[in-house]
Image 1 (tube, rainbow, N blue to C red):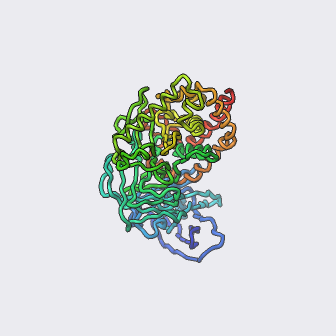
Image 2 (image 1 turned 90 degrees about the vertical axis):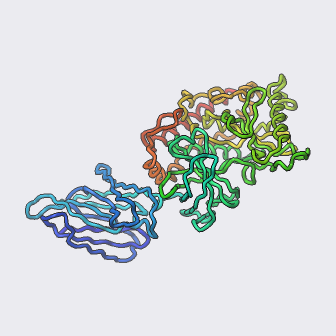
Image 3 (image 1 turned 120 degrees about the vertical axis):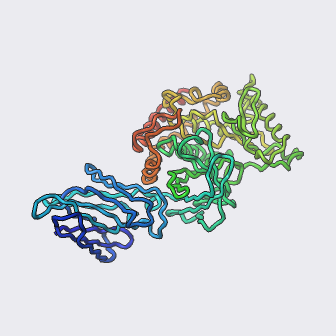
Length: 551
């Protein structure tokens, strides 16, 4: 008699005993008995006693009608792992519970030949399942069985979006139903019964990659998933397609939080909440839910400025949000400084501004630039410090140096309040090709971005001629370097958090395919991506500590 013993470890613990006579006929189940013995305080290992290795383990759609196709598990006998993948949404009240099928080898008692017998068992795949296969000599091989399906075993919140039509571009919004499954987060949830959201594409170079970034707009001001620092309609889903670690933006945001933890200047770092996204019934991947960079409470907190404020000279001085922007050309509201810097006006909004407001901030930016390039630009009263908050600029530079951001000066945000001469640098944004992920920058680990990053470096080159500014960078680095040294710990935290999600993500999108032409070649595995990132941080820290302390 061949005995299969299977014990689950779900909320209600069950024992399944399936007994087969050893037969010498076709692959046939003779009997199937399921015995429910109640809840076990200490769930035991699931065991299948068999006369060899598993030849097959799968989930049939014919036995699980909510599935669109069979799920066949790959079996790695060397590492004793069985793994299946299912990336479609499962319309079921208990999607984790499925009838699994398996083949096992047995010995025909009459002929001595190995025959294959089949069985079925109800399995809860919310957690990995352990199965021990024992041969006729008593030798046991213990297998770990995992179904990669974020809907069932995600450790992250899930955003499920069903759009009314194709999402074609980053201009036209499409209405969509949204469900937010918190998976441990009880605030800021949403369901299909509520008013529809809107969704569109976003991004510049990332817009053309296979895994698309999105911008979503709620019908009301809302804080999804307990992100209560801001209650706004617009939120961003970063795809991180060219960043195979999936965490470069999150790492940069963490550096920003470290640098801004003790400052007096106006501060804002976009938030980090990783999610698993389903779009139109298909798993789309791991995404970084974060803020839209805009003027609003909890984000860039300067005064609102609208078209109707035109003519009021007491309001024309702010607030403003600008971006020194290499991609400015297609933007609806931008200007070029006398020294050739392209600048996008992010606030006031391009659909609610007055011409005199755009003219005023254009002229004011020119005033700052003239001060920076004047003969007495180092003068603390009449030079550039009259117009830019120095600590914010120092922190901005350190963030971009630590991250090795090759786009540090290609895209630079800065904001200004009303009746205040100062611009504050930031917030930071867009780090998916930072941390040594840009093949156009050779040996980025051991080069200053003030020298090696992409043009325009006009402003940073001038600042590096100011010895007092460099001394402030050295001082600030030494104040913060002990916290920055521990960044590798944050890498480990995020990698652990994303473990199940990254497996699903890279089953959806091949980790070894790098479609962004200027990004570095893709790693062979997720673990390699994490190792590369940690090695970069360690080497980068040593390099910067040496460089800054030469000044």
